[in-house]
Image (cartoon, rainbow, N blue to C red; front, side):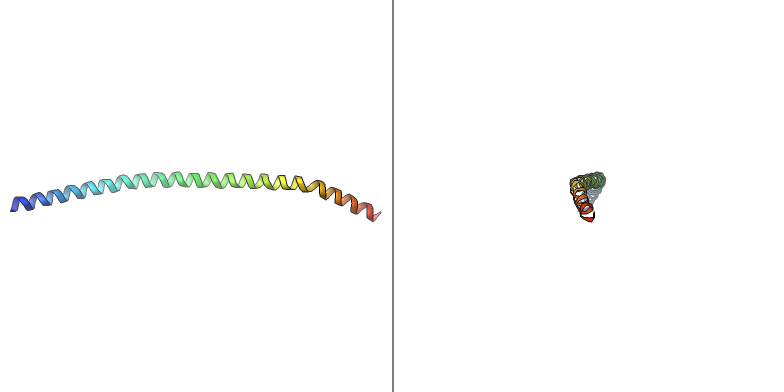
Length: 79
């Protein structure tokens, strides 16, 4: 009976060690993937900012000729 109890304790200890090692391995993977996610989020934010700047520039370029035309019409009306 004592031998059986000792075997059960050793098995439990082995399982606990295996579980701890698995948890440590999973934590390493989690940390790695979280770092990759942060890098991707930064890259997306930078790309989004660049695209927004380009869109703003493009929109201004599209509007400027109309503003110039409207301005010249307005100036002609003043004369």
